[in-house]
Length: 171
Image 1: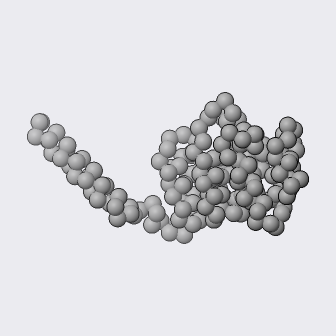
Image 2: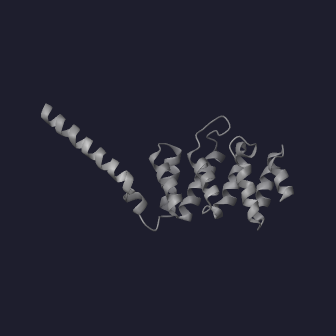
């Protein structure tokens, strides 16, 4: 693990990718912890599109872990910045994340994809494509609102009805 950890902070982009690959090949659960930690925002690894793509591929099989899912969620929703341009590699990172979450199919991963669907732009596009590639076992997360949020949704519908009624009266 130490050699792979050193590669993650190398000045050589190819060495960083090799470091990610080595951590992915390790059977030690600490390797995934190390990789997720090295991808914290602002780190050298988090600014390297090729290393991020390899990291997403390595972490895809671990999308059931909360820390991995949090990282994948950040990648899915990442906006373009100078360090994260809309390059083809960045687009592949986002698409790979969406596919990993859809393939995992657990409720928390689907929740991230639902948030992605609600966005306009790249996150929505890849979330939609991923859900078509790996349809969820149930549509409940898409159709049913949690109890606390249901009351708010009912209020929104009532407000819409009131606005329509007022508009009809003005005619």
